[in-house]
Length: 294
Ligand SMILES: [Zn+2]
Image (cartoon, rainbow, N blue to C red; front, side, top):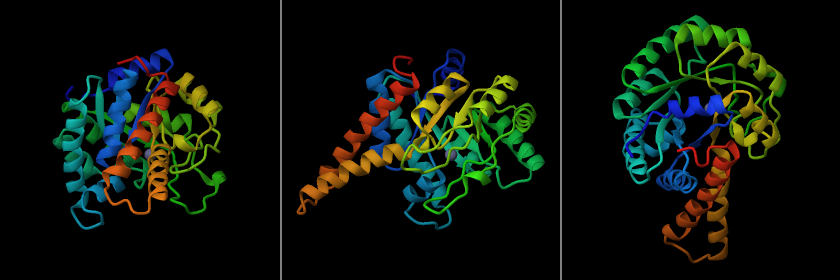
């Protein structure tokens, strides 16, 4: 299929109490594993790319323009990946600035997230609203975030210092901007390797009571499964999964390389990495309840 705006599938999931999985891709093999896993489970799926993935794919450094080149690569790869399967596939740009959002829409991404976290609240609202109108004109799904899901990247962080989303600001933000899906902070953290974090489910229920908008969980790899499952019942309709995939991919690569110190052909270790990731994609799709929903 061509790339789809999967908002209708997210809305159905939200109404029926399951979720759509959104998986991060940093390489072609990871992107392939996402669509192959979705096809095997007959599930709608979201491929998402982060700012750092764009920098990596765009040249492996932070030179000017590397994000745009990365967007071009990912847009091209995403179109081929989507066309290789017959389940709905969305290509989503995660945590982007204004310029990246505009470029992604022009390049055929079907979903974007503007992250105006660095702006004062009123300015964040104004910019999000403006970009949301542009996205909607192009038939693109618009996500934004209120509250903080930290990205400590290995550094220490204080779980008590995380700015969790309040129902008031969530309601104000959605009404003022017109966004389709809202990422909220319930205590999760980006990049954790173990499922050690609990969610503030009471806060989720309070937010859900005020909003009809499907809600998004970032940092799910670090959250215990019971809380994710409970959160899905209470309005989390897009679950972002990154670290868990990379862990499976890299684990398989490490095993192959450890077993054969003479190996040089990248296909011989990237192939097993991709295969290991397909299994995690399938397991997470079944876990969020999206299997068979394409
Ligand atoms: Zn995120």
